[in-house]
Image 1 (tube, rainbow, N blue to C red):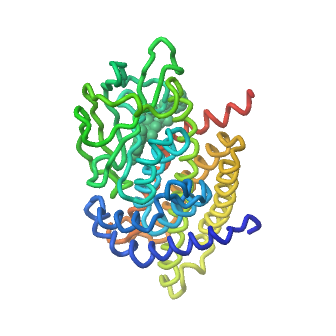
Image 2: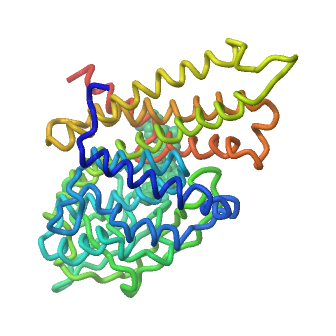
Image 3: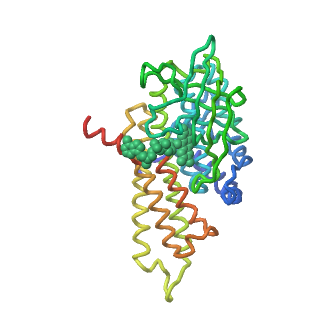
Length: 380
Ligand SMILES: Cc1cc2nc3c(=O)[nH]c(=O)nc-3n(C[C@H](O)[C@H](O)[C@H](O)COP(=O)(O)OP(=O)(O)OC[C@H]3O[C@@H](n4cnc5c(N)ncnc54)[C@H](O)[C@@H]3O)c2cc1C
């Protein structure tokens, strides 16, 4: 490939692969079966400093930008997609802090997050609907030196776990200003009035918990506002756009895993005295997957490089998120087909990929939302 990894990126990929293959792959299996958050594995992964891969070394980050973070997400997903979900959902609030937080906030919180001492959650989606990000109902009312937040968020990933330390919450500060009346706040766990709902079992992201957040007269000091008052929507849209690259990278890792499993099973399966891979009807769908995997890899690399260069990236990140997340579902389906009837039994790892892939077409903006963003090019 022409867009080769740098020396540092190669080193990163090798170190994450070593964790993914030697530690994660086998030890995570019981957690997947139980739909349980793997606290010790996340702690072990975080202690290696990988959570901070993208961020400024001044805050103990790895300084490898979104290009580096995409390598981490893809490599984790090839071992277990749900683990990549924990990583990418922690990255969204970290990106908000890194791009818009004050030096004081970054010193206190971003450093802790890069060191893996705590996990963060991203509080954007509300029960009234996530696709229209501007339609936020959570209120933040100024009161002396504080803001008082009231409302709820839903599907906030990582928030119900023992490692959770803070949430970034978008709320309405100026209801008369429409989309310019939204601001973002850092809300630490333990703040009176901040409570967490129960995690439901999901068909995908089985080991990541996604919960409701309740803020009831929750008081935070003004210094916890992230960036400027009224800048919340712009911050969140940019952060979501960057996050889409990590969802795409997770989808790419999942698609590779699907092909890995299909290849391993197909190579040993003989029907009517000949290997099933002797039938082009079996191998052609996988050849299509390999082709699309190559395309997704190039698209992810390009979108990440645009982001790291601070060049316009919104359309490209939507394109790659749309393409790769749909590819993940296609690849999971093709891999199940190669397994025949065994492919739908939970004892076969491939069966779980259908649900894991399905989630990726919903998070960080559904496929429809990505198409809305891409279609703007037609009228620009
Ligand atoms: C497992 C999981 C983890 C998540 N983690 C987080 C998290 O950590 N933090 C967070 O803030 N959110 C999180 N989300 C929320 C996620 O981003 C939303 O589910 C997503 O944005 C869709 O919002 P919604 O579920 O409210 O669907 P809705 O907005 O109600 O949409 C329902 C359907 O209508 C379609 N639709 C809506 N509007 C349009 C339109 N204008 N044109 C065409 N189609 C449209 C949508 O595409 C979708 O198919 C998570 C979701 C899941 C499933």
